[in-house]
Image (cartoon, rainbow, N blue to C red):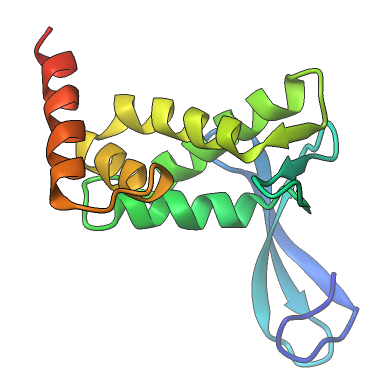
Length: 153
């Protein structure tokens, strides 16, 4: 594993343990060249995933990009990093176990929406505002009123 500080390729594993959800192994490493410590995560990858964008472009699936977008939606909400990790791990597992390695970006967005709906209504609306490209305050009002109607049933 290459050191993020000095780029040396020699590091030693000092500690390994599973993450809370058991979906990854967290490893504490120490660089043999500069003695800096850093953390890596090892996850099972069932298949290579490719995201089909709206303009027919293809991009490799990036877990970190999904974590960033969910984290932005959850900012200043009572949602911890562990919950976000668990949510993203669940979505990634769903995508990997589907039959196709090419996933439309819309499918990923819908899975995130479904997961956030159950987690936090504010994060759900925030994510929807970007995903569904809200243009005016009226768009928020209409969407939020639908969320409230579903929650009150």
